[in-house]
Image (cartoon, rainbow, N blue to C red; front, side, top):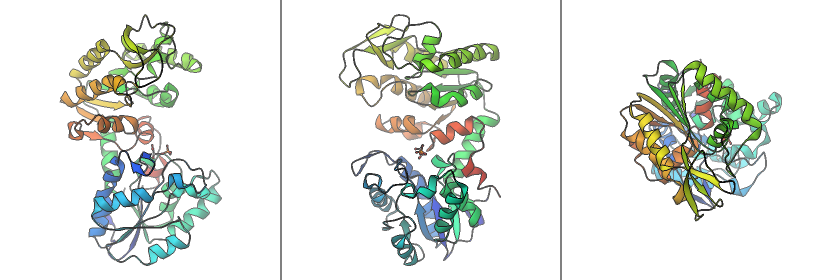
Length: 395
Ligand code: 3PG
């Protein structure tokens, strides 16, 4: 994979595919982690005298212009972080984009409007995607792939444009891949993975693969209830994916066969309703009342998980342990994060909600070896899949 050092960028227009898909509350960015992570590559290109054209997506506007998903607030924040103006193009490959790009001087930067306003970006039809990729590539002379969070998407800006322009991987992509390689190629043991989040169906591939790789798998969050049910427990009104029970029973058998220690919650905070101020109590997972739903792992589980992490040499964590957005149900996620911070292991937080939780709970980001910017991307990498956006950057 070529890197920035292999590109001569001085005076050239460089298209940077970044992942600036940040959570917004109206026009307020509630977590700017991905924008901050994109800054070093953009800065390096600007310092090298390039004219930088950044492109990115925000949310899922499905090929339609929708102001709710405009990247304009992101342009403002990027400008603050870079300490210089970011010209914002009001479209992706139209008149505004072309004139904005044409007026860039060396060392100046522009951000195009949301790539996903264009149906060609995500089209499954190679010709449609290819035609849009031609227009996007036409805005620049060189391409830098740095949107790690989107490298698992076979989209025009990720997969097709690098075919059309001399290209390199940006510093963020290089750093993320290096970390994930450490996890997949020869992890120091014990290798412990903590998985959480709402749905087990989102993690089937990665669980199947991890069961051949890890020493211990700790399962919390909403997905734990399908495991508990598969073990024969009643889970009340907790999140349950009945259609995944057979699959999960297969995982339980496979873990036993592979000698993987699969650790499930032993107690939970069971609430009467899904609300921030819901009345709740600690119950054992063998006795979840029929009219209650588990919204966080309980205190004994927090201790159990911390103990199972204490001797780890490598840890990967993806997915919150409970509804961390509600203070009353954030304790389990905090406990797992704190166990990672206290650990001497190589610790990786796998993007998405767990990275957002670290920042929301105001935990020190430097307490972890690495916080990935890619949720789905890091999971698919660990699943052993070929990621289109990485394949496209290979020489
Ligand atoms: C993410 O948020 O994981 C990436 O930005 C990719 O977004 P997507 O899941 O909408 O493709």
